Image 1 (cartoon, rainbow over the protein chains, first blue to last red):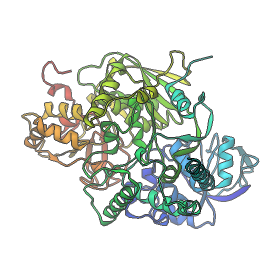
Image 2: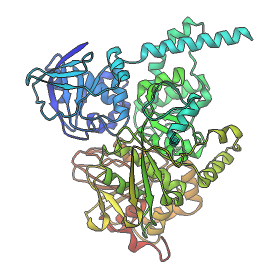
Image 3: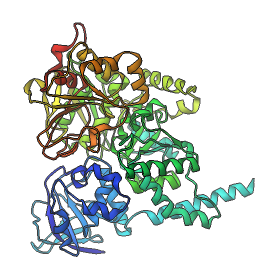
Image 4: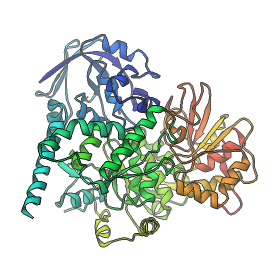
Length: 178
Length: 442
């Protein structure tokens, strides 16, 4: 499974979710697109327009991208600006899991310093490789088998629905056997 | 075979089989789940949207997995500051009534304070909530961490967390006695300074050692609370007699007492547990500490800082409990807040507020010229009650001083202990609390 995109933005270490979407907006809408319209509003106001200029954008950062608050709205803010993947050297757990749950690819590689804005990247999940077609370099993707599976699946919803079905069936069986 | 960490033991108990760091758990059952009014409403709406048809197929009404394991705690923007916030609280309250879930009232307290005060979360449990500071409950010896909206809706349906990797643990071993004027907050800011914002990424920060053993529960909550600022998966401490005294008191307030089942949940790390790393901290070398703008890990001894401050916030899930208000009141008693500075005091719960009223602390704050508000998260996250303007400088006892966190991105936020906050409010600049401490006060 391959996902292509163009590097639209590049950031340094420790980009927190407050920078991605400020907390004063979180309670003002239940619509995911609303958060995309306000992405990086105080920290990097051109984020939305620059990312939306491509059909598929990729955001690149150094270490610890998405740290701080657990707000999932940070993922909506990125994803709904045509961003298909975030490539970074590390992600804190909550943000990483929020990405997986929303089909935004959190791609970890050892060193992002050689990737520049405008480069064409290809995420190859089967080969576990991030190809930089502009520079002609490939980076191994650091990920567990489970994370790769979830990235391919685009989230857990199907699994959770099936799990709920089984649980309800088991409940019913218990009730009727009593 | 090496021993297990408390984290491994809690997961093993939940799974009914031995688990170790690195194991992938397909479905982890969660003991307690709580929501604030920021994420509760969208999680409820998504739960209804994504699962209603599954219940209908099975001939059932929409029903959360177990209402007695769930609590709703509106705390961030209360009393509500906008129509949309009020709508969210109404939505939660209607859903709670329909489902039989406990719904706290606006002003009852900050979620991470009432979760432990109300004995909702207990030692040895797995607790999750839609807020990164859920790690506060680690002080009880529970495995507690923040989740996003989607995991929240999934948990409402099944009570399970999917594809959970048992985290490795960093042992943060703290030795030595605190100097005068040094508190848990100074210790954890110092640790953040040592580790950096990403320093504990993916791992649990387990605090051990005689300094931790000698700390009261409130100090332990503060340390666990701020550990997410070094990107720890969560923080945890091994329960001891102080933990049980705290939990027994909390249960007694609800006319409950500890049961054998509760005791059976309790876990502690083995002496020969495997840690991915051990970090030694000498508490006796730590001075009163502040974190400078714009990172919680930008820690400096307060003696090196004297920047002017026009706003002081004593509150938040990090530092607004009884001992925090007590030390601030000792410093503010008979003194006035600087004419250049606004002091805002927000107790961490209704219980703490009423306790502070009964014991004369609120009068001390009011006499000093403070503004006192009912319990809520306050200006910590920049939505209401003391938003900073460009150029404002705020000393806050909260946990995050990111650029723009409390209002304008051109404001400056410093983090410190309640003692530093009180001394700073008096002087109108970052001040060392030691000169204000009454004689004999540690």
